[in-house]
Length: 99
Image (cartoon, rainbow, N blue to C red):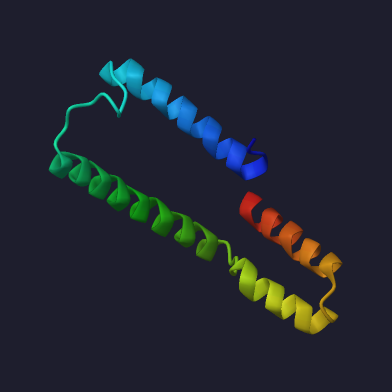
């Protein structure tokens, strides 16, 4: 049984399936699209995803938030690798995002 993030993804899939059935009156498995049409739909979704990812990165940049990896490396070097320092970086990032 999935837990944590995996459970959230499963719940999201279930929700999206219900929305799709309400909107299109069918499931993906029952939809008679040709392979090329499925690929076109997937391609368009991927393009949308790239826009959402880019916008999210711009938002982080706007607030001066570095990547978690670079923050972790900087903190570990300065603090000798303490997990408490990592938690502080996460809290600082959250504060910046709320500004």
